[in-house]
Amino acid sequence: MILFFLLGFIMLFGGYSIAYFSDIKNNREWFGENIINNKSYLARITDAPSEKEHTWKVPVTIINSISDGHATTAKGKAFLYLYKDRFPVLLHKGDTIFVPGKWQPIKNPDNPFEFDYAGYCRRNNIYYQQFCSANDIRLYATNDPASTPFIDRAHEWCMAELDKYITDPKTKGLIRAMLLGDEVNLDPELLQSYSETGIIHIIAISGGNVAIFFFVISFLLWWLRHKRHLWIKYAVALPLVWFYVLMAGAPPSAVRAAIMFSLLAFAVMLQKNNNTLNQLLATAFLLLCAQPMWLFSAGFQLSFVAVLSIILFYGPVYNWLSPTNKIAKGLWSAVAASISAELLVAPLVIYYFHTFPLLFIVANVAAYLFMTVVLIMGMVIIVSSFFPVIAKFIGICTVWLVTWFDGIVTWLQSCNPVSFHFLMLTGVELILLYFIIAGFVLFLLKKQKPAIFAAAIASCILMFSFCKDKWKALHQQRFVIYNTGKANHIELVKGNYYTVLYTDTGSQKKTDYVVKPSHIGWRAWKQDSSGIQDIYEIGGKTVLILNRDIDSNTRFHADYLVVNYSGKIYSEELRKIFSPSLVIIGNNYNRRQQDGFTKEFEQAGVAIHCMDKDGAIVIQ
Image 1: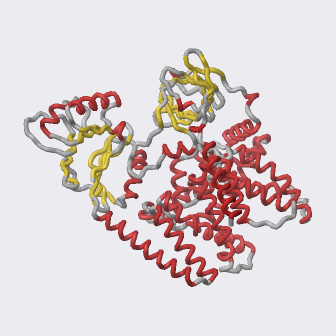
Image 2: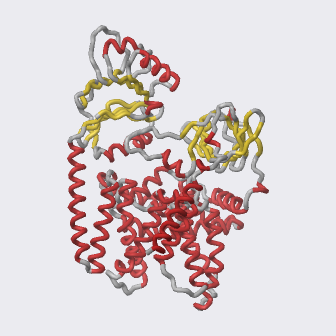
């Protein structure tokens, strides 16, 4: 018992120490400890600039901080956002640049139920960003191709060959992501389609890629047929697999697959028994020792849960049928793998992505076949690039195949009910759902009667939670002003419906990105366009939307006054006419104007909320 507690303490202390030292904030040389505007910083660009709507996003790592002509060693990662102008961005990965010290903490717009982007950045040791023009940047040194690591050069060469022989942008972006892990140019609509049909996993480099890669190597070593020579295939494949994973950027799912393959390869080479579950747990342990924050990554969780689900349930599911035909066996094997993976993955997908693909079996079988063929075609294009005629022909075939499969995915996407795109699970409900699955599985496989009773109790609790959520949704009334950048979007949420009261956002996609999480979280995804007005009573408080300047001596009390026009604001006049408890300034005004209004209203004794700096607001 003492040995057990001692081992537990060592593991706990070791885990805490690894997490502590992996956090850049605990590094004395972290540049975020002492940020001063008059400083400048020497930084190296760590990835190619990616294009946004109004800016170019440039990831950098800090090398030195410079003040009064003295350079001090500094460390840390950050984002630069360069405003677009009429000149293209001429910066490249590996370039070293001087940047000003206008760093700002990465913050969320505080829209309800939004993705915690700031938290995501913190888990990747990125705390600061800055917006500046290209004129504020000074190039110190360009990237020297000779000093570029061989792995990076191989990656760039493969990217260039794919660019040369695949002309369709959508196909090119997909092949780059699936084969080389480069998702910068991945088509957003295609990404959404794959996500809603439950096949988004084929884009990420994972165990499927490693399996196909090993299949290709085994095919090339076909002449080693005897089982005694199997270890040679693994010995040849092992360094090649790791080279491929590192060349693709070493994402968590790929590293997980590479470690599991390594453990399998060593077991085969040493002629030891293979325990897949132990390999999976050992892989998780090693990965979390290297990157503790991967534990909170949705991709890491989905990857491991999918493999765990297949390990636990593939055998029992496959035994449901006993096909004799080889083709039927292969298809049933793919179907069984899809069903077994979905058992534990589906709750997590609903929790994170609020969707469930109804035809996931059809989609996953088709996607697995598609992924196998496309990845092999991509490899053939790269290998046969020395024979342009062959590479070009394979590129044309690849474009045709991706276009054809895209049509299938679109059809599968249309088969899903609209309500299946707005599913919601809380953290407690997710745990209850896993408890139910565990109970039913233990009863079916192990015939344990207490497990079925526990699952039934958990099911009752889950149904009660769903009923409580529905009751809250039916009785809710919320007035919401979203923080959508430089535009305004105002909604009234009542019951299971939402009404758009005002919007001036130009991009519907941008609006949906901001408001859809709220519609899902509040279970109000149906739109109602009736009863639009300027005055509302929410929870006994009056809310007035002021769409124009007012010139009146009439007194009208408004608890919440929303200034929704771009003209001059007279704080004293608004205070006398409306006597508001809170004035809300929309994004019709820039940050400097909002700062000026804040001073005016605070001097007048009126509370003020500015959307740009204070975030979204919900009145309920």
